[in-house]
Structure formats: structure tokens, C-alpha cells
Length: 231
Image 1 (tube, rainbow, N blue to C red):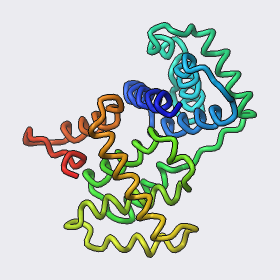
Image 2 (image 1 turned 120 degrees about the horizontal axis):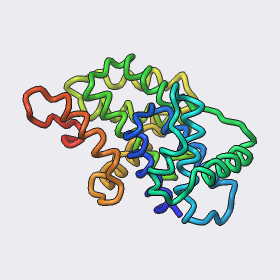
Image 3 (image 1 turned 180 degrees about the horizontal axis):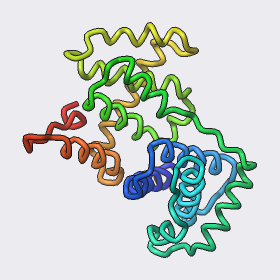
Image 4 (image 1 turned 135 degrees about the horizontal axis):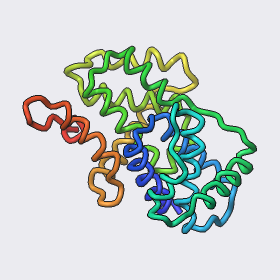
């Protein structure tokens, strides 16, 4: 169900961070998981972690210069699955996908918009945080990726009006897509609700701690300048 899926994605965010994989790999991993779960009915929840590491393995092979070893992924599962089982499920997953892997380029599109709107590091990581937590909620899967990214960028600018008094420029670029301002604002409200739920959650903590850690690392005076905390 949605809760078990969310727990899996939260765990994968931790694994992805530990293995120092790219954000593109994380987003592709979640996409492969959701495609598989949409096609396979009554998939046993005790195999969700096996599905997760297999999807991560495929994604890292597809996108990373040096992908994770199967043995290391088995160890990250605390030995719940052997290397042989991971290889077998990797084949099963690829068969279910018809060996077709299509990347959304959602992260790259966000990077492009963050440059267009002159995001500083605080803005950039706040947006990355908002974009990443949408992975936890399956209901965001149905939205157009263009709309999702524009909604995140719009939120970042609205949350930092002193730096972005020209936030309405979002609307100018949005008109060249199939999305509209009403949809963007509506989805933005949904993302804010999700953010509040994640901040108050004891279950879905990986993204919050990940970006909190980034801001702690870059703080030069020892104080915690955490843009996520201030929202």
C-alpha cells in the first residue's frame, strides 16, 4: 500500500545518499518501482525492499559512471536477499519493463529553471528538498513533470520574496507549456501540505535530514542557517 511504498522510498533516499549516487538515479529508481507496481497486482510487501534495490541497481547501471556492486546492495539489506536473488529479480524487473527505460529529466529541468531564476544555494536546496519529498507520495505520480517542477520553483520564490520580488516571471515561462497558473498554484498548495507532514513525521525523515545536513555543512559561523526549517 501507499504507506509501505513511502517507507521503501524513504529508505532508498538514505541508501542513495550513502552510496553518493546522483539525484537522477534516485528519481529513475522510483519511476521504475512505480511502473512495476502499477503492472503487477498483489505484489508481496516482504519483497518491496528487493524490488527497491533491484530498481536502484538498474538505474545506477543506466546513469552512473561507477554503479553499486550487487554484494554491497545485499549488505545494505542486512543480508535479507542474496546477490543471486537480486540478480534474478533484476531480470524479472527488466522483463516487466520490456527492457525499456525512459528517464524523465525532471532533475535537469529543475536545474535549468533554478539558473534562469538565479537561485542561490539556499533556494536551490530548498527546491531540491520539495521536489524529492514528492517521491514519497504516490499521488504526485499522475502530475505532469513540467507542472511539478514549475510548482516547486514557484514555491521557492514565494517563500523568499525578498530575493525574488519578480516571482511572477514563472507565469511567463509557464505559458509556453501545456500547464496553467491555476494548476501550478493548486499543486503548490499540495506540496506545502506534504512538506508539513514530512516535517512532523517520525517515519519519513531521510529527505529532511539530508538537506538539513547540507545547510549545516555550508554554515561558516557554526549557526544553523536552514532554509527548510525557516519555511
